[in-house]
Each structure stands twice: as C-alpha cells, then as structure tokens.
Length: 112
Image (tube, rainbow, N blue to C red):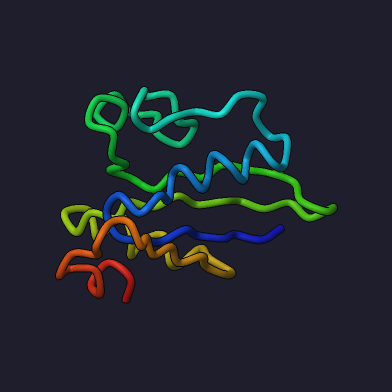
C-alpha cells in the first residue's frame, strides 16, 4: 500500500486529476466534477458549494496490483495546516502546476 498526495496551487486541477485517476483505475464509474459539486473527494457541503477543498480527502484505488491511497489536498493557504498534516502520511507526492492559471504569490508556501 502506498500513500500518494496531490499538491498544487489554487485551481490547478488537483481534484480533477484525482477524478481522472479514480476513473482510469476503475474505482469509480462516472467522473465527478468540482464545478457541479459531484467530485468524489469533495464530500463536505462547504466544499461542494464553494467548489474548493477545505480538508484533505483520501480515496483508495488499485493500480497494477498495488493499493494506493490518493490524498487530494487543498491549495488554499487558509487551510495550510491541513496540507502540513497530510505530509506525515505520505510515501510520495504529485505536484501539479497549471500553465493555464498563474500560481499565486503564496504558491511556495503551499508546496514547500
């Protein structure tokens, strides 16, 4: 079993990537959407309403015989404690940088 975290700046596509990975691994049948409030990792009503994760969410998938706990983190510095707490459980990370949305000045504090 491996614990993999996804980190990125606000609106870079962390949750969208998580949804695609879950679909590709056949852990879900239908793709959820942040904009419609149906993302599988956005379970709190405030997350669904605002379209942003406020806490880290863990989802499990199987890939090539390996069980992976995928941890979708928030990109907002308002919730940086949630990001830091996630780091303790990880075996590895995926860092997403979006070329379409310019990282904010606080990007380094979210990633580092």
